[in-house]
Amino acid sequence: MTAAIFPVLERIFDVTGVPPMVAFEANNGGASEMERLSVLNRLNKYRLYVMKSIGRVESEPTGKYGYQTNMATRPILLGDWKQTVDKRLVNIYDKETIREHLSFIVSPSGKAEAESNAHDDLIFAHAIAWQLFQTEQPETSYEWDLPPDDTVLFSKGGLY
Image (cartoon, rainbow, N blue to C red; front, top):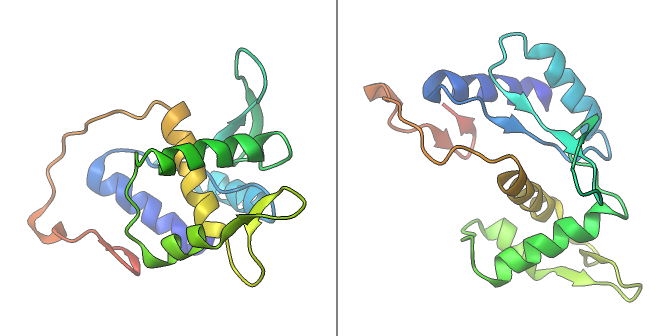
C-alpha cells in the first residue's frame, strides 16, 4: 500500500500546507509499512504517529511507529470508540463502515470482535483516528487557498 498512499500524503500537504499524520495499526504488517513511509518522507510532507506508552501518568513515546493493538491498548481503543459512537459525537455515512459496526460483537470469550465471516478493519481505522484526534492535539482551523482546478480533492479512488 505504501506506493499508493505516499503520493496521496504528499498531495494533501501540497494542496493544504498541512502535514497529514499517518497511523497504521502496527500489527500484521502495519509497522513495516510505516517504516517504508518513514524512509520516503524526505521532504517531511507528512507525520508518522509514534505510539505513546499506556498506563502511565505521563504518556511518553515508545519509539514505535503506528498504533499498537494489544491486551492493554485494545480495550481502551474500542471502549473510547464505543463511547464516541454511543454519544453520537461522530457521524458515519459509509455503508461498509456501518455494516462492520453492526456485525461487531462481544464473543462468548468476552472479546469484542467481528462476528464470523465479517470484518472489523474499518472500525479499527476509525477508532485509531479518534485516538489520534484526542491525543495529538490537531489544530482546529487552517487557512489556505485552493486552486480553481482543485474543487474536487477526494473521490473513492483517492486524492486528485
